[in-house]
Image 1 (cartoon, one colour):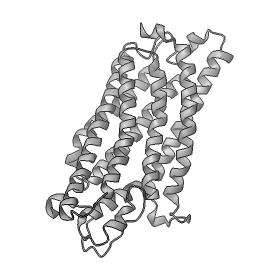
Image 2 (cartoon, one colour):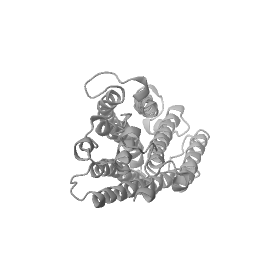
Image 3 (tube, rainbow, N blue to C red):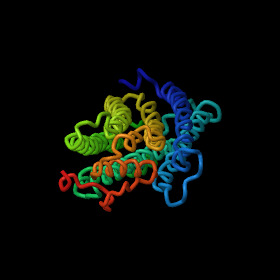
Length: 321
């Protein structure tokens, strides 16, 4: 058995160490992200009308559950090795322990918010067309249902149960599979949309090089690849019924927050879209507005009008190209 090769006590201690290290990374990116959401490039506070409150709320949500996850994990390990009269392995194997249940709650909540933001970005980029994101939304709803059911079921398990035992195994495996699939599909849709617009702009103005939409693609693909790879590893070790799942699942809680923060930081600093103002000042077509719209929805920066008579919030590529 994979679990016997990596005992639960070793797995939990390793997980706490990895969790703490990446929580430190998360805090560094959080403060930089929050500064970008609330301040301008010159250091002044943004006006209330230019603050993206959706992203502010999402960042605070992730801070709460990232912190709660580390705190609960530390408490769980202290209970097992210091305060409990039972053997550490027995305490750590008690799935119905309230602290252990909270660890699953933090994972489900963080995954929920991460996928919510990804779906929101996809919806925005596709001009708020629900039909484009209907399939990912259905999977997201199913994923959320599996997460809630798994949390409830964990509270009813006996003390000697494991996270890879039935009946919890099908729910967790389905949750992880849906999370991975939703992220892959949604990321593909976002990348395809931006790449299509990028090619359209290059056809209109062939002299433009290093178009900022390419920078957006790099930012989104880099962030998505980190999370997707981690989710794939988590699903693999879980299906193999290895206690390494404790390490990977706790790591993912922090990675979701880190990748979210890094995207906000890149857009807020203008590293993903700053060349827009320099290379497209003479371009009066909607692809530019689309790029600015993506930046606005991610960082709260106001998109410029540039005398563009198109008052639509986003760009319909079929009409303009």
